[in-house]
Image (cartoon, rainbow, N blue to C red):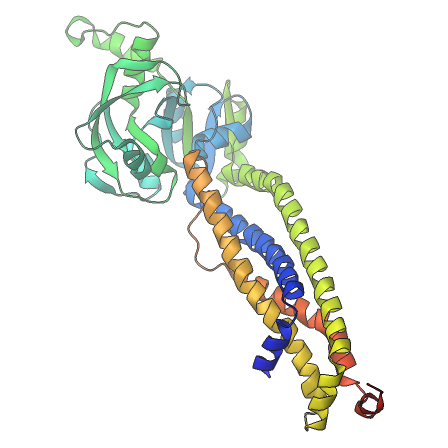
Length: 407
């Protein structure tokens, strides 16, 4: 029955090829939406790394979140370094990790921070060690691959967060470590000490360094009191902090809080508009494909009435003849499901490659998504729906009438 259905299916190759193309395109669009959506969500959750709150200068919470968590936007400004100590004094705060942004190396951001930032993501060193003094840098796995830098190499950052900007040639960073690939945002960052960022920008703004042998300890402390950082990543000590801490931060002069979970939900809602359009496009294609398959099967039943009558004469029951028509639709749907899944996965791989080239958000690693099981089920359901009426027509064929009809 399967062999016969396969041969019947391809007895009209142009019609079958058109139906297969329509089904494949529709299923590929659905697969792309399901898989890309799941991988984007996995990537966002991975980069959140348990960060409950981002504190920055007054401005857009979405911008603060994109700059501090995903490193996809410019920050809203700087805040006093004393903000870190102020946050740690709050009993609801378990951890506060400062980030200082402003420079980049070949499009990869240079982030001044503490080793606690690496610990947030559970990243490990592949080579070398963590920085121990200013102007030492640890490269993310992707940065090391893209730039070709290794242990002991030196490089200069450029002002700004893009690939342009003036280079700080007088302040060379030394590579002392390379992180193992973690799939997180750390892979595309250059990490260094907070003091490295201050040293570079003190010089950039024309500030003279002070000789420790000729200045008092009080002057040194006063200088550090005016230091700034860009953002602070906060982890809560208890769920109660989610209701109280953002309000407290926003009440402080010059400070703005951004809840990554809330802002990420807003971001996914904005992205969802585009996925809804693509999903609708796929549904339209599937509807057109289902209608085309229905017409093709109905025409096939009419064209093969003699063959079907002969099958009945040879002893095939009516249900078997109807099954033959249904099998044609199911074989076409199975082939389209395989091609659609392959095409959808290929499109996601292309998207991931484009994001890597643009140093944008990375998709989370994902095996077989649970939602992808809907694709073959959708294809099978559409095939059964399209074959229902033609199969019923085949089931109700009057063999006696057909054999008495003049040839």
